[in-house]
Length: 216
Image (tube, rainbow, N blue to C red):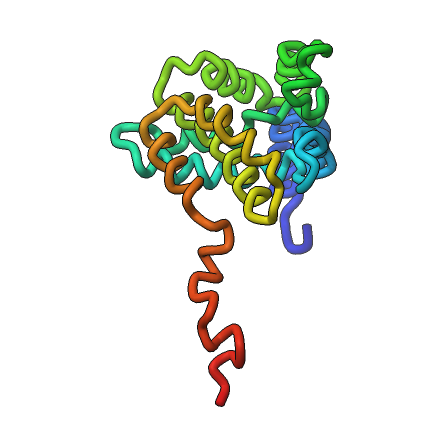
């Protein structure tokens, strides 16, 4: 380093070595590359639905937003825990892919092996394993909200397909609603089903804006 003394340079190199010894940056980098695979992994249920498409990463993205909303609607829950579970609930699908309900009749997901391999693959893996174990047990309210966020994301996706004419998507909605656990999620589901998916931007469908953008 320009302007530094030999002693300062030695201290910096020593600190770098300590950091590298504490955190294996190669393994961390590999994990972050792995998360990119989620953007390339399709949610396979859409193949059976007949329309629409979504990657696992896109699913996780909206699940996280829904988890934030559900946690904010609920008293005495740890928002950070909910978001952690939403973020990592499908992380193993980079390894086992997304197997829908039909696929799971005939395939062994080997999710526990994927979780264990992931936990051993990089420095913070054990933390992710702990998060997933709490999520799967559903013993605490945060885990139930995270699971409901997962189920509600499917409901949102189904409603979007219903709104563009997919009749089959209508028949999937009842079973999706029955999966919900918390009152907060059940109440939100009632509104989702009644709301047009374009209502957030196309409320005044006959307004002048869509004719002349308010220009005279």
